[in-house]
Image (tube, rainbow, N blue to C red; front, side):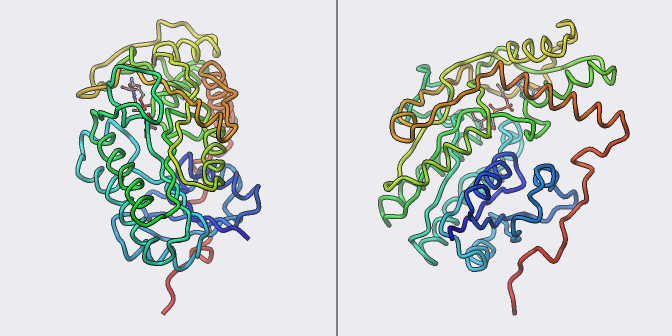
Length: 345
Ligand code: G4F
């Protein structure tokens, strides 16, 4: 049986990936960090809590990484963990460099030590390109990151390449452009939009206040991207692949689409410089030709669909809440402790 260790399994991509791998009969282990406010709502909202095994691990601690590899004995490791909120990386740049960048060297070095035959996937990011002025970007486009997060992701991208070449580790990079879904965290702009739009529609708030409305992003549908990630890992040779839709829309256009889906007036949209970053990428769109030709991967959904599906999901959540139902994030704090696998004496 194929066994996967998924770091960041409590995040959006980690949860959708776990669901996909379970559907392909993998045994799935997921790493988590103990926190005062537990974060298992995504796993529970897809009903995965009894189907996966949880291993405590912290990306800043090499021993815990080695321990997680020993417990799970994976054939594949998927690194879906990062400090993924770009705006926050300007506030805590060194922590971001450590968790998003250096941790990838810890992971690959642990794999090299324990079992170099383990396949490794790294979630690289379109944030690595920065304002390189030549969208749509492909795997060969120049990378000039302008955020601490982008710099950290680019260092991790180079680390993957280095372990591939120096030690022949099957290390794969997926250069993922923005991808969104109802399991997205509320900090990210698409979910901030869909959540506020749903609340406005139901009379629970009266405005949607954003920062830079002109930034253009390539917004895809996250479940399709985890499928692309799975396909990359099934190839005989490790490589880099862009996953994108090749279609750009501004934050304003995404918000307008969301408001139109809910039938609310655009005048609720406000701007506040508090939500702007010290510097922002103007335009990111990706060329997924290589993923299409090698993996036969092609996105079905564009930003219109994504905005609609996210607004519909948040409307349903808030209607359920008004009917007295529990929110997924009000779910039980931790899964059964007996399911957490620990180092034995
Ligand atoms: O939703 P965002 O925070 O995503 P961002 O920064 O593009 O990063 C996401 O995509 C990357 C791939 O390119 C990932 F690597 C990364 O981990 C993450 O998943 O912001 C999108 C755009 C930015 O231009 C931002 O300035 O929306 C703009 N924006 C405008 N108002 C806002 C807001 N972003 C947020 N989060 N909140 C706002 O109020």
